[in-house]
Image 1: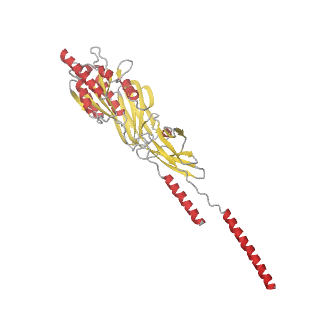
Image 2: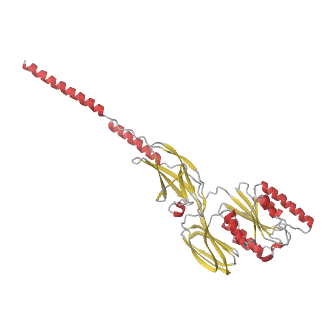
Image 3: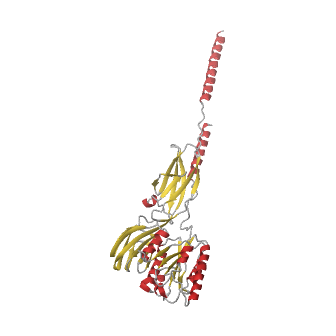
Length: 445
């Protein structure tokens, strides 16, 4: 009977142990999942008034630089207009061919931005979380005579009002023109958009970088700033868990050569007159090299943009000797590789239990979070990330986890039973002795 009870208790403990090892549901998005799509459409003014001082090429550089540097949650399209649409690229199609094609655009005629704005409004996906139009223009609206010009201005203002109702923002890189009034700025005022003016102690290259990193708040690591005609650099990516790493070079002078070398699954380049972007898809090594040369000495800014897709899952175990639960948190990238051996990413990931940040150790790529309790309880577990200069796609979610303390049945106390048995044995022995004595006396008689 005693053996059967012991075996039953051990089986119950074993079953509880197995149940504690079953994983809790995933805490984050599936790999490569974009939770909020954002869309930007650049509207480039190709009227005759944009011919001076290399303005058009700077506008082309600006649009292509932003399109190539943005992370994957963004989709970028481009429309070139004067009195009609003269060139366009749909979402996701802006590349080196686009940059070359923009150099061949003939700047001519008058300008009616209402046409471009109406076309852009129809291109947006209604499901996009953020929709922006970016004008790069001197702001002129003009046709052959005054009455047609006034009509074109009213059409633009009406179109802006419609855009505002759809929640679309209008931003502008304004190129000053003493001969014309900036009518397009009406759009930024009505939609609460951003307007940057070239020449107000800032070049269009500086405005473009400011728009990318301040207005759109794209995370980046600044690799360096210099005044030079050429240079080379070894860049430490810190790990190889990102989906892509981009090297962005922005210069105040025309770029002659730009090269990036490093092992990766694919390397994509886009270069304009004063910017260059190299995108390394799934880097295979931490160290990459970059070199460049300019036509003339000038200011150079170099940035690193890293993009990660992370997800997390968790399991729990219980150590009966110590009465301690261990929450095991696994954080993996888009290739299902554990990432917590990267010190940079480890410092970006926090585990909170009931709102309090918990310390953890990493063993074999897994975060081990101890939690001690002497009774069954529910705890709220949250795995969060901080960007820390990286673009990280991760759904921060919480999960209620039940920590079940195994109930260990105490072994039966047989003390009383043994006392009774011993007592009965003693009585039996005594009776036996008395019986034998009585028998002996009888025989003697």
